[in-house]
Length: 194
Image 1: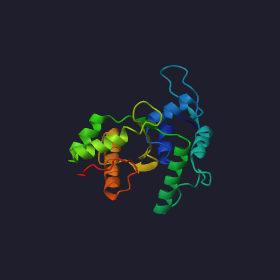
Image 2: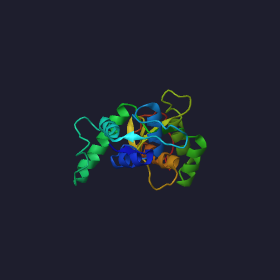
Image 3: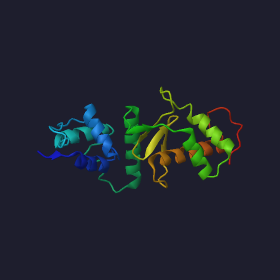
Image 4: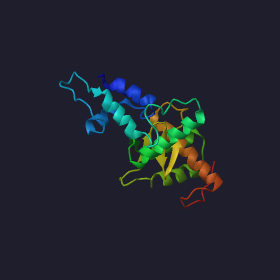
């Protein structure tokens, strides 16, 4: 039976849209979420049996989707629907790759780069600063190419290289659009939008 290294397992998990971060695989191994064979020495790495990797992948797929045929379709719309269902399935189990803790200075820098008004910047920070999810500081969980913010799945902005920027720029635009359309449910709606 084949045994995968962390890097090999990561490639399989990435192909199956489970994670985009190799460090998540290591963390899941340490936490026992993925069953693996721990390294005997510091030089050795984790090993994962093929059947354990398949079981882990199957546990992350929506119940009505099989590991073997989940991406054997040429229908792009079907794949997008499947990916969104998988994302929400994982999010409902609170299984995220990690969290970012946005800082006011980051929001200010991103807003200035987009030439948004100081009022919009303050408005956005007032919303973000309340998104604590039980922590002392704001927390935004992410998974694959999207993050969870105020109960919504928001895709990251892939126009930026730094991971936190992909989230903060997308969050800025999302909150700006909500404000323009009046769909924001955040109160304190009397700020000027760019």
